Image 1 (cartoon, rainbow, N blue to C red):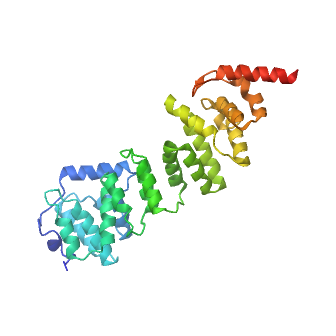
Image 2: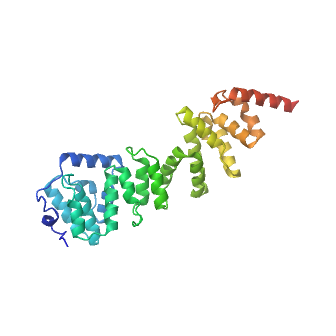
Image 3: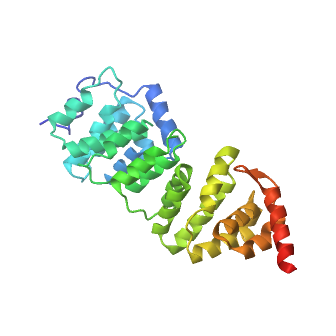
Length: 313
């Protein structure tokens, strides 16, 4: 087994090794992009090494030696220390691709530790698809699942909405943070209004109301007209229960949603779908006359007004 406590053994390939400027700047940039905390920062904190941003990335060979010493002097289990050293060795430029692998093998680092480090290293390096492959391996016990999901959902360089969904469906993390719930719900809204709606029902009544509000807002504030049209049709066809229906109507008629683009149109469209004449009568006169999904709402408005006149006579 390799003597991981010895800097000379771990970095025998170059005892004077130091991070180059390009690698250092990239790591700092990536930390800034994910709310000033890399996943390796969390691992360092778990070992009792505070203020991770001051020690990683190490700016010089001496800084690297100091970091190695701090890791080795931690009271944590050896596998945790070895995992962090494995992470650091993965930072070595690509012309030495087997250094980290050789170290892991020499200290018999368990496969699940190695896979997890491979995953968070890729996540810290914005290699999202590869990170997903590692972090959804069945052998792993979910670690930092909410933080990982949140990163997949919100990282500015991660634009594929299917990745967070794949992670969530594979790992099935229990979500306690509303920030994470809201971020994941935003992704679901991009993919399917109906699926997002049914998922919101699983989050408890209070959160369900807040998420339903977000759902309505995401549809009516969609800037792409063709996309908004299809999503609006999906929205007004949702199988709302009695309480959800009341909230939907109150939010668009009297609440903060009343000033959203097409709020009145949406109310009337919903009223027509469910055959609720009172909603149509109350809000039909306010239709904007736009053409939505092939429907000329000026014509609908005229029909409603004629119907209301006929009813009165």
